[in-house]
Length: 395
Image (cartoon, rainbow, N blue to C red; front, side):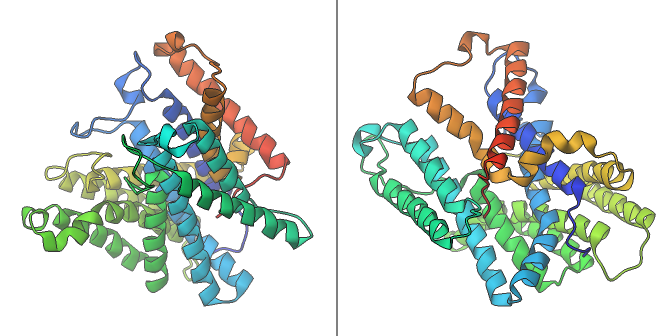
């Protein structure tokens, strides 16, 4: 792996992905827009560019893992502390996803004693306090603010009540986008370390994850209670395969221990993306393309698309030096977690204050598209402002 320099194209892909995510999330449900600007139905056997956003997050996480683990190990010099850091990141992603999912569905305001949007605002505040990167010289403030954040999360979990009768506590309906990334990140980190970054073995692990999903969907497994654990991990296996694909491409371009030229590495990247598309094509008769079901075909096609996009960005930005245009995406690229929750903070704040910033009657067709695009730009500039205020979340 290369020295601890930033790969601008990885940051650019991360920033672009977050920008598109904010745009499509706000656009979701807007009537009068083309089908390709929304998620495809579960059984459609199709995918739109919107369906590639989540796997792009997974893919970028994979591309960053070799750099992140190497840098952390050099910083701490301890294998044990590296594993603790990985677990802390996973715990953070699972916690954030857990809270966000419970805030989206089933919250009972009367039983909880707090309006939903106030509860969400307090959650976002506690999350920022817990995972903010503090720059105080006096560590006392660092520990005090983080302790307040953790205590806030515990208190919000304690007061939460859900369901029609208000008797339900917080529970994992599902883990949310961040939680799914957390599980996939954990498994990918384990495999990367066990396989010592070997490209061929990592590709075999992609095949294993794909086979795991396919086997878990067999009738004999679906109808056997003894294999409930396998059925429950099918989605994690699929998502992990995308993260592993990101690791493979990172090793192809930036791995050490081989003398391949830049041109050769581009050819290897093209070959890898071709393998992913061919594998997806061969599997498609048995498993439709479906983001909702996290099918192997969707995973393989999405990873192949990400390989192509990154290769183009790497050639343009890092090889040709055309990077000035990426400045717009830089705040989100370097502060992705905070940028991800900004829309939720804004929505909760305006809903709590009963402020309508854009009349719903105009959220239709091209007007809705333009509004969502404008909203995504605003979020990016908000991320830039928060960066200047040294508000930066990091797990």
